[in-house]
Image (cartoon, one colour):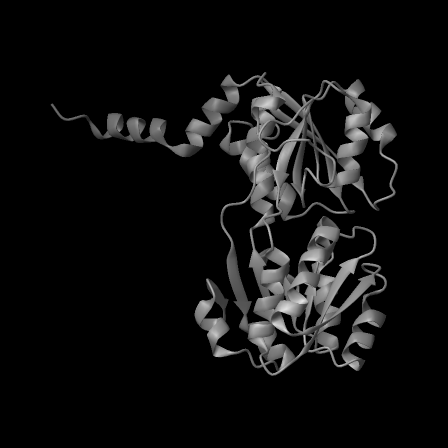
Length: 325
């Protein structure tokens, strides 16, 4: 005998994802998370983290409290914030910078510490092993060998008639790994690379003007968590000086950059939520490996190309995973 419309409706309602999430939220024990935001404002990273928590059965205002605090500069002293987290008995601490991890690690050896993004967790001294992180620290690491060299190559391929490019990096968060990788690509590709440290965001305008005057055709912006939060300012300055930019992931393109190649860092914060839930519910941190990205994509923004008056080699457009019209 077939079910009545009312029973069918109830069956469909019980199977719905929204109700399943609500039911999971009621079943899971409440969690309090201490979260250090890099910069003065929340961003796509925090949106993705909250999404990841919902996917794992934790909903803000129901069974989840997130105590957001802000790290405005790399030298921001976080000791008091960490002590407040400890006093509040947070179940986990989430950070986005190396300095945040070190401050959290100095404050506690028992509360799980999860980093949403780092360039190379081993080289930066955050863990000794990706597969079995020691102590109470794990998270997401986004270094995948020779990515910076690949970005320089793609930049050269996009502008095959040019021979002079630049690699710029934030002096507050210099990534020697990315800089060294780009430098090794210089001889192999037969291009001249200008390396320039810039105070982001206050030094952008002067530096971009100087690079344009020096005949730089395009530049690669070495990634860090503060350059992505400053992407609109970086894009504004680049457009004003007519400077095409290669970035490390497509989240930067919303600011006006031309191309990107790499993983989606914001997805790391979504995955970090799963690590937070598991660690806060008793899984030993050394059973939660540091995760690396597995998918890399080339994205070209033709809106930026038109604004810059830049002609991109057709071969690059053919190779792109996504072309934004």
